[in-house]
Image 1 (cartoon, each protein chain N blue to C red):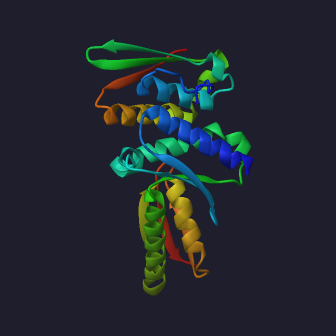
Image 2: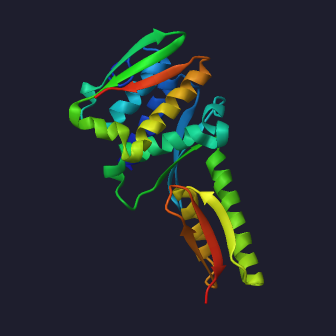
Amino acid sequence: MALTAQITAFVQRVVDAMGVSLSAKAEETPDGTRINLEGEDGGVFVRNGGEGLQALQHIVATAFRRQLGDDNRIVIDCNNFRRDKDAELKQMARLLAEKARSSGMPQEMGPLNPYERRIVHLAVAEDPTVTSESIGDAFMKTVIISTKR
Amino acid sequence: MSANPSTPLGAGPLRAVVEVVARGLVDHPDAVVVTESERRGSTVLELRTAPGDMGKIIGRQGRTAAALRTLLQVTADKHGKRASLDIRD
């Protein structure tokens, strides 16, 4: 896909400009396109809970918003940091869904950013007996996981 | 790579990252100008764009500008420098 190549090239230009030694590799996953930055300088993006990675993610999503449209998602990763964190988040969501179901008590998760909430909602939706909703009106929201009535 | 207008030859990483990111965000990349100066041991970057492109740099609730500043900070840390960004309109 030409767009993926274009985005990968842009990400590479940004990291080259930053003077860090990382190389952008694109792959297609069931959740969309993922561009992973590989190399020894990964720390610059992963540090402080991955704030550099989040910033780059926002820049890329904004720069290519028109071409990506509503349905195409692109995830920027660095030495698989994001992928591992997402897997943890998914596991936690499933665990809390299980807890909500067995105890009947709503479970709280967060505060989470929109990207994280999407992962949680999708993980919870795999189980038809539980449901999830976001609470709050700020950028970061808490997700409540509870049994369906 | 030298033919690529968005990776300025000879520019330091601080200026380069602001230029490359800004040019990726705007409708008129050729109008993006970044100047660099030193003030009390810290590098000050000044970013100017075509008038209609300023909103694209700032973003909703300033989130894009915040992301650009984060990338600049991360770059400065990596190179043992201090930097700040002035967005001029």
